[in-house]
Length: 259
Ligand SMILES: C[S@@+](CC[C@H](N)C(=O)[O-])C[C@H]1O[C@@H](n2cnc3c(N)ncnc32)[C@H](O)[C@@H]1O
Image 1 (cartoon, rainbow, N blue to C red):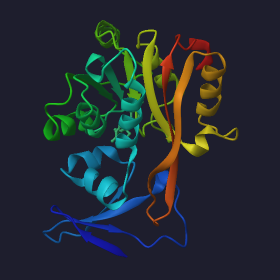
Image 2: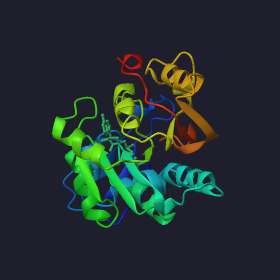
Image 3: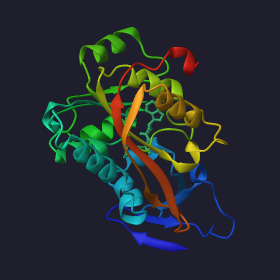
């Protein structure tokens, strides 16, 4: 077993290398300093992870070397360079915003107006607790079942940019929620997201491969940059590859494409 002391608790990775564990089943054991025993938390149990200050950062960034928020904000910065808009002109909807890691990176490149949305309360609470200056507003809502007043408020923000990092697929954000958020962005608008490389293949069952092909073919989305990179390490130390895309929204995604 690998064992690391964080400032908070012991975070233990079980020895499962030989069995292999799929990305959405990876887990750790958390040991309280009080020695009350070990608690198993899956990496996808975000509500539990966000509730423990520093655990998300320790797990995904210090231990597993996640590079996604930096990779995508750098790609956005490159895309903005030489274009008509500055980072400070962007009004961003951060979809699956979690505890604000992406918002923080966007803020570092000069974005001033960022609204977060996530499906769980613990994400909003953690963003407020750990990065209180980043989001202008933060909504807890399911994008597949948006209450009318939330939809109206979001539309009133007049987003010209949408970002979604490490939140598509895996039982997280489905194509319908992606389309809902995408359609809240003005045309033309800047859109940036990443997705596990497997979800871009024709065998993918999440629906994203088909949707991404379709929006590109129909020029609803025009990629300006595409980059395959190591998103993070898996629990057994092997790299997990994602594809990041930054480009222009030219039109809304027709609802029937995601129904
Ligand atoms: C891996 S975390 C990524 C968080 C953040 N974007 C980052 O890069 O650190 C995925 C996030 O997507 C959120 N999520 C999952 N399903 C969602 C949905 N249907 N609508 C909005 N957020 C969702 C989860 O609650 C979680 O906070």
